[in-house]
Every structure is written in structure tokens, then in C-alpha cells.
Image 1 (cartoon, rainbow, N blue to C red):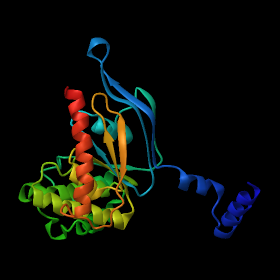
Image 2 (cartoon, helix red, strand yellow; image 1 turned 90 degrees about the horizontal axis):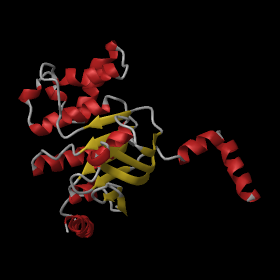
Image 3 (cartoon, helix red, strand yellow; image 1 turned 60 degrees about the vertical axis):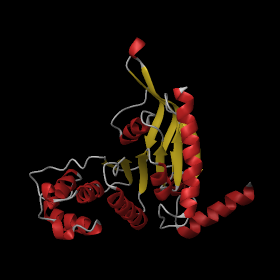
Image 4 (spheres, rainbow, N blue to C red; image 1 turned 60 degrees about the horizontal axis):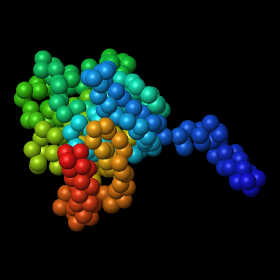
Length: 273
């Protein structure tokens, strides 16, 4: 024990890192402890989540996977601070969280750049800096040539790219994504997977991604958390230790997807029976 302490002290002294810094680095950026969420009262009461415990480290890409109605989006709302657990704790050790949903929900009267700039305004970016920053973000999602277009002039995939740029404009440490590509066609969705994987690597973001698509979860995540149904509980966790970039047709992706699909089907069947 003494040897460990002296080694730690030497590391702190040599790298100018304080014990508080070390503690912050070890602390999960998202910590969910025995969280339960109940909606309604009496006979109308619905237990959406029950006893969920989950830690997410800085830079992790975690997918929440499960059948519809298993509480995935409810947990995302708790992490975002849009709701509070009925019991237990949900702690987020980050300055900002960004949100991206299935619908792009862009302002139709604003240009593409204007939609990004309004997020920058809300994030406190000075007016003089917003245009250049918005253009940088649009370049990041490969929409630099479309800054002056209106949303109705864009395809569904392009609108989601704008929504992604707007989410990134919030300068978030944690990006929360609720089935953001669910309404896209297969080819566009695969392209968006490439984009979010690239941006995750470039920016070192922590991403929590809700999906009911098994292959999407394996394609994207460092870790996939499988939820049980009614009420939602953490049933199992899969570490996806596969080299990047990945593709749906990769044998390893298909193999792990098959294992997850079997467990998900068994879970759904148990609640239907």
C-alpha cells in the first residue's frame, strides 16, 4: 500500500497533475445508480425503468438497445436533465450535453447556416464568431456548399447532417442521440454511420445512442447495453472490441449481431408469453 501511494505521488509530482485531476479522470462522465422512473399514479402507474445502474466513461460510444417501450429514451431524457428519476441517481459530470433526435426539426424559415448559428447563440458564442464557426461545423459534416439553402431544399440525410452540426454547435462533452437515423433509407443511414464514427474519433466525444437496430448498435458502439422490457432494466452488456472502421457486412459485426439478436428475441418472447 505504501509503495502504491509513493508511486502515485511521484506520478502527480512529475506530471503536475493534482489528486483532484486524477479523481476527475477516473470518474465516469455519466453515472446512473439504481435509477427508477415511474409515470402516473395508482392503477395508471407505469414503471418505465427499474433499478438501472450504468457508468459511461469519457470518450465512450455506448448504444442502448432494446425493444420499443423498454425505457431507452426515458433513460436518455434523464441523462439530458429533461426529467428526474423517481428514485436513484443520474449524475452527468460534463459542462454541456447535446441532443439529436430522429426528426431533424430544423427551422424552415432559416438557412442551413442559420439553423446552426441559433444553436451557437444559445451556447453563448459571440455574434461576430458565429458565422465562421457555423461554416466550420457544416464543413465537418460535408455541407459547406449548402450553407445558404433552406431545409426544404435538402434530402432527409442532409437535414440530419444539419441536425448533427447543430448538436455539435452546443459544444457538448456528451452527445445524446435518440434513434437519429431511424427514418433514413439504408444507404443514407450507412453514410451517416460513417460520419458519426469519424466525428466521434476526431472530437473524442462521449456518445449515448438509442437504437432498436442490433446491427446499428454493433456497427457503432464500444459497448452495447441490452435492456429488458416492461420495466426497463439492464439485462446484459456487450463490449464491442472490433477494429474500426466497421461495416454491416463484416463477419465479426454479423456474428456479434447474431448473438445479440438471439438474446433480444428471447427477451421479447418472454414478455409476450
